[in-house]
Length: 133
Image (cartoon, rainbow, N blue to C red; front, side, top):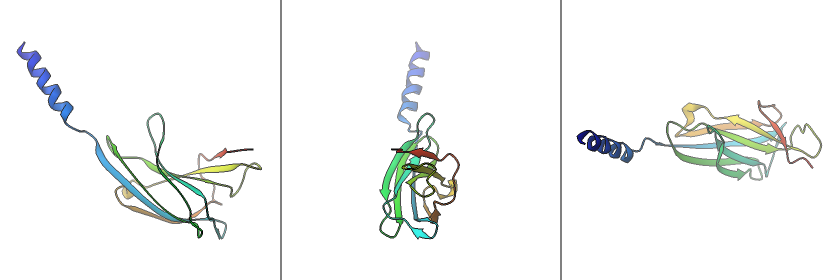
């Protein structure tokens, strides 16, 4: 009986302890295609999950192609953020958009990552065609 009570107390103590940590990221940059700034491009801040990736925040580039996006999450361990940009630069197929993922370095978590110019002319790994009509 004493072992049961001791085990119950240990479980309650562990259950009250939060193993998660708070992480955040701010990403800024300018989206270009060739030498032109691209307005209105969808920029998603995503977090790689074990089973499914999660969108932390979304925005669109302004008239000069600039964006600023912030995301935060409580997570066991650290977040694994990346940007996903949907665009029509370098279309592989007519009437399709590309979704291009851009990794965010671990040392930028809990800070600001300035990507400066994000050139959509440069192919990224794991790009996909979407919204094909």
